[in-house]
Length: 460
Ligand code: ARG
Image (cartoon, protein in one colour):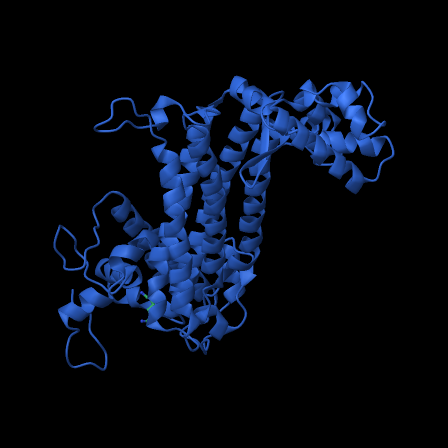
């Protein structure tokens, strides 16, 4: 069916249709589009704008169309080839065309008091609601997996790093729980954005609203949304809700990428802190010995794509005058890509994490090297009454002395300690133990054994 084109004498050039159609991308929104149209039509009948019988026919036909799409009987295609029966601008026109095919003239009532501008904005917001639930479920799974790992290794002490230099002993559980906290904030961000996105723009029509006495709030309620987007110009020209979602996806990916990077580092022969299950690593086509952390690398790599999605949409929006501009059709690819990529990355990370094991022996070896307990020496002197900065100087001098003598802090005889200050007693050796260092941390949120136990009890 070639749609009539109102004021136009010439049909749209096929090349122009191919260039401008978003059908192959936005066909993903068929469910949202049908839900939105059904709610709209119910309201139109309720308000006496279209006959109740017409609304009933249209609503039933829309359910049939959904079934046709889901069973593959209705296939969208741009050129009508490949078994596809619809050639249309976008999913909204395609569904309307099919509706008119099915119910005839009354199908054309569906677009009363509505424009594709508010229709697409609604569909996207409905999509965001589903996407948010999907992402939040995956975040919960990952946080649970990380917490279970933390519990499994709750007594294991590892070197903590700053500047990628060994810094102080920390519990491995504490390190893993840092990621649980990061993803917890991402979850909050998604939940918070929903307060703004779960609102209906429908009824804004093209930009100015409509002379028909529609009930915008009833449509919002029918769709389970929190309310309406008040200003009609804002309702059709705003893409903040999409941007907030992609921005949150970008932050999630950044967090995943840091975890991925640590897995890559930790599974090298050089570090050898962790091992990823074989099912999540790959070999090399030439080097038989290789076991590569490809999943972690891909998560790290895909992060760039999601950042690209954010920049793409920000750039589309930045120069647009109000209200709707066709440029905005370019919003769907970045949105779908960011959501799908982030969902897939969260999912693979959770699955992979369940197979990760850590090497406590290797942590111990590294904890014995270097001077991770130098801060303990300074804190020891502070407890004996010395001001911190002086204690820091003395601990530094002791580190220098041990480094010159190529020995550890615990190997230096007490007499040598006492040459630095008489405040040193034989109890100094007690603090020179990584487990003891961790046990002694008492500040809220620290790596202290008791604090981490408490953190492990939080319910997710
Ligand atoms: N396919 C369009 C989009 O996604 C729908 C809105 C089109 N509106 C219009 N006036 N051309 O943005």
